[in-house]
Length: 344
Image (tube, rainbow, N blue to C red; front, side):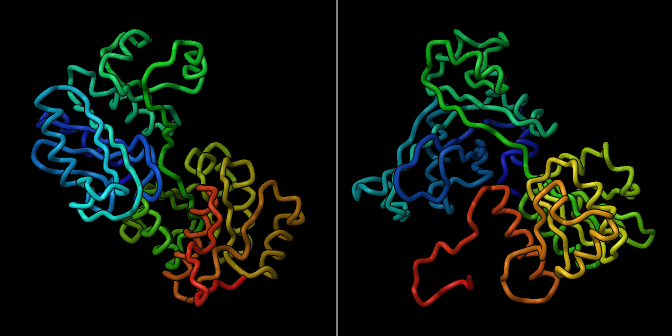
């Protein structure tokens, strides 16, 4: 199962009343930690955990700690201090050297399932929101505008701003974004590893191709949808216009030009075009504009220089660059090893 919260909630939804459930959230870290503040996982009374807060070293102890929450019916904050050799973290063999505070909250009908039903709905509709988690089981009762008995609450940005004047409560607030969406325009055989890798990342994957023999569902099994609609009619297609990443790879100059034209008004942070620069000039000549007139920054040639010429290597290089772009990361090596240098 993918570790994205959206996937965890989908799995939990149909099983929410079959056993006891608990939401575990990292609310604070200091120093080194496997995952940062806002990471979440689900635990149930069958001894199962879904998602990861660490590399697997904390999860067994969190299942044990969850029993305390179910017995008392209240929340609990557990601290793992890898800086303290007397802490249980050393017995668990973590050794990252940092501190992690984890909030454990029972999920059931009496607390309105922690408002996770509404959070799930927001994510399914690709709507960003804020999720406020109480660090005190009764703290949010006084200002719960929906009138339900949830100790957690889903808020829009407007609601969050409106409540900023309310006396602060002891709570943890984090913005929740829907999973990234990628639109792959062109369904040749080299698009298949791109679809499969994006799916394994938990991204929403849309494949576009108007050609009869391309984009078959029997081949692109990991695509969320395959759209055969002509490119010049996609101005109102949400799967294109709301995509975070668009990759144009039709291997056809005319189709690539039409795909770029359809992409110019999208919300994409990353638009990549497969092929060398001299080919790109032909695409823009077909489009009838200069490249600098294109409405969005264009990544071309697309991808990072990772080496390798197989479709799988190319897919990896494209997704690595696109991932860094939408996460606002540098895509540089984290290694300080002088014997290993990436090409500049």
